[in-house]
Image (tube, rainbow, N blue to C red; front, side, top):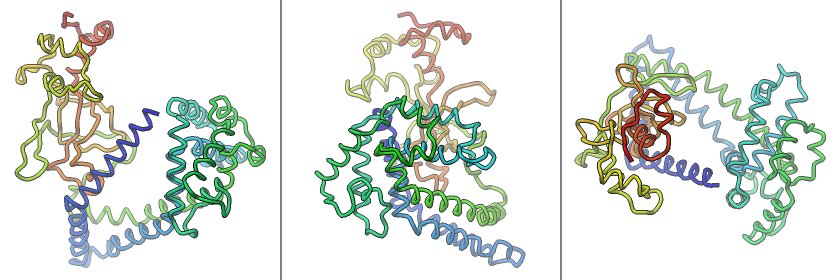
Length: 409
C-alpha cells in the first residue's frame, strides 16, 4: 500500500507541476506561439509545401483521439488504479490471446512474454492493499456516475446494478461485497488463472472481478482499438511535423524519449526558479540533511547520522571545495519518466552519481523544454559510499567494489 500511495503522490505532484507550468508559467502561450511561428515559416517558401498542414493534421488526430475521452478515462483509471480489476482484465486478455496461434497474438501476450505476465501477477502481492484498492474503485465509480449516462463505460452499473441507488452507502456496500467474495486477492488464484484459465471457463466464472472484466470487455476492447487507431494516425502525421521543426531549427531539436538507450550530456549547474529569485546552489551536503531533521518522516535522519556529522566523521568522501560530503547535485540534463536510477558519468566516463528526480519547475518540460530552469537531481556517489561505510554494515561490499572503508565508528 505504501508503494502505491507514494506512486500516486508522485503522479499528483508531476501533474500539478505540469499544470502550473502551462498556466502560471505561460508555457501554453509559448507552445501556441511556437506552432504559429512554425506555420508561418512553412508558408514563407514554396519548397516547404511538403510540410503544409502538418500542424493542422496533428491537431485533428489529437482531437479525434479525445472524442471518447470521458468513457476512456473511466476505463483507464480502473485499469491503472484498481489492481484486482486490472489483474482480472489481464487474465481475460491472456486467455483470449492464448486461443490464437502465437504469431497471431498481441505481442504482449505471446509465449515469449508469458513468464513476464506471471511475474507481474506475483509482483502485485507486494503492493496490493484491499483497503486502498476498494477506495480506488469507489473513486472510479463516483467519477463515472458524475458523467452523463451516454458517456459512462458501464463499470458503475455492472457493480451497483441497473437502476439501483448510487449513494455513498450503496457504493460502499456493493464494493464490500465485491472484495468479500473475490478470490483474486490470493496470489495462487491469480497465478493459476493467468497461466491455465481458458476463455470459456472465465466466461462462466462467478468471481466478481472476472465477471466485471468480462462485462465491460466490449468497452475495453474498443478502448484498445481507439488507441491503436490513434497511434497509427499519429505515426502518419507526426514525421512531417517533426521534420518541419527540425529544418526550421537547423537540426537543433531535442530528441524525444522513445524507450531506447540514449545518452544526454550537460553540466552541474544551479538555477533560479523565477527572475529575481535566489539562486539554488548545485550541491547539498550532509550538514544540511541534519539541519533539516524534524524527527518526523521524511525528515527523520537516524541518530547515527546526526552523531557522525556532528563529529565530522566524513572519511575519504569529502569534496574539497564543499568541505564535507555532498549528498545531491543539480545538472542541466534533460531526463524524463523512467530515467530514475540511470548512471551519471563525468567527462572521463567515471560513475559519479545516480539520477532520481527533477526539480518542480521542470515538470512541464514534457510540453516545452526550458533550459534556464530545467534541472535533473542526482544522488552523489560519495554520499552513497559514505552511507555504505558509516551507516549500514556494508563495508564488505565496498571492498568488493575496490573502495577501502575510511569511516571509524
